[in-house]
Amino acid sequence: MKSKIQQICEEILQEMKPDDKERTQVAQTVSNILNQLKKEVKKAGIDAHPELEGSIAHGTWISGERDIDIFILFPLNYPLDKVKTIGLELGKKASQGKWRERYAEHPFIEANIDGYRVDIVPCYKISKFSERVTSVDRTPLHTEYLSKSMKEDFKDEIILLKAFMKGIGVYGAEIRINGFSGYLCELLILHYGSFEKVLRNALRWKTQEAIDIERHYSDSETMKTIFAEPLILIDPIDPTRNAAAAVSGDRLGDLKGAAEAFLKDPSTRFFKPKLLEPLSANQLKALMKSRGTDTLFILIPSQKISPDVIWGELRKSLKAIKKLLDLNDFTAIGSDIWSDEEKEAIMAIELTSANLPSVKSHQGPAAGDPSQQKFLEKHLQNNKTLAGPWIKEGKWVVELKRDFTNAKDLVETKLREESPAAMGISKDVGAWVKEGGRVLLNEEVLPLCDANLSFAEFLTNYFKKLPTWVL
Image 1 (spheres, rainbow, N blue to C red):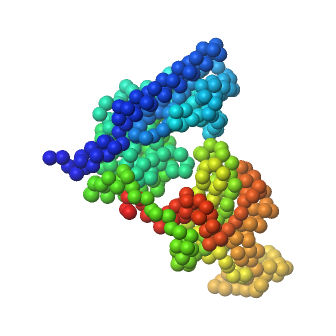
Image 2: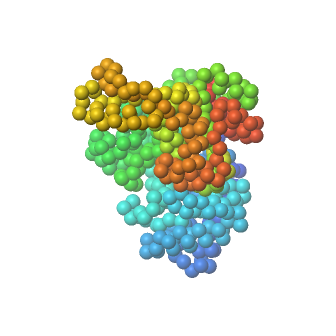
Image 3: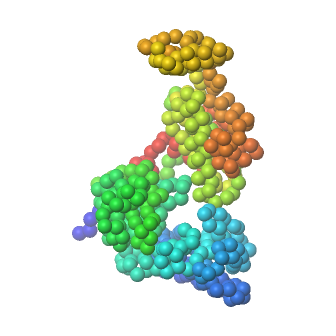
């Protein structure tokens, strides 16, 4: 008799494993793109070779996924600028006019062909990791490694693991998610042997769990001195790389929490989560008021650049604004970022209060300390001094007038008057803020919820904070 887990897995595979029709459609599109690229390569008279990479090449994609990864491999004797320039031109010519240039660490072409999002990426053809010039050069080696190491029945297990990761919201190595990449899921199945075994072993993972499939290192302690991330899985083809480097402690915790719950009570809800219904503007207003806090929103009219670049800059800038608030005694109890990755981004910072009293206490040196005279001179002549200095519990104390008593005024003023770089805000975000950024407080943001369902969902999830599989 089949276990409940086996029954659930069979049901999910029936739905999420691509059928023959879908595989034929994908294969035809891939073949057309590769043939077109080969023609363009031949026409240009260059030494380059296009290859299919990623989950479609590995046979581990989930039904309905519309992403195709094509890499154009150049010999190592080609200059890097030539690889980038020629590679992009080849990608454009093979994209039927529906393309745009994208930039992360490495430029590539993103095309829309037959309803698929096709990434065409120039790289170097290498035979070992030490030859790599750019980070993407490893990808064809990943495909080669998996084709040699992966058993056929592992593919179903990988699809199950990816679907589970997607369902609980931890799938994706991009900065927006900080979770498990497709390649990492494949390696975990390769190491443990099945979807269920990955979950059971994940529950046993300790801080800085270290996995080394190809045994590049003699012991785990050595790996822990080299890599600092919460989970370490040595890339089989590159011992200098942690394939799990993107996984944050929060995403690791999410996986463990969901794994424990699924193993105790298997259900399709982990793979097909019920999404939280976005609250109305009036409901959100009531919810914000009931929390007794104040939430600051910084609206940024962003431009369409690489999503990882956008999220990286937003994270850096959010950290800088939180530091500004902290230096001015405003206490943040939570924060998050929303972006449509095209035109608009919003940073949300929840504060215990957006308002502070005009006076603040400042402690100085101990009474009798050699530095007390300097402290006295400074504050006796300071027009911000409201009371003191005096001695309290053996230390000099002074009461000062605050520069800012309202968080919104503080952020608005600093964003308007100071340079972004001086504040620690990224160059792009700083420029976008200057072009039309706004700072809103509490219900001032609610009209945006009516205009943008995605933002309403974000705000609902921020305040509710329920994992999807709990619903």
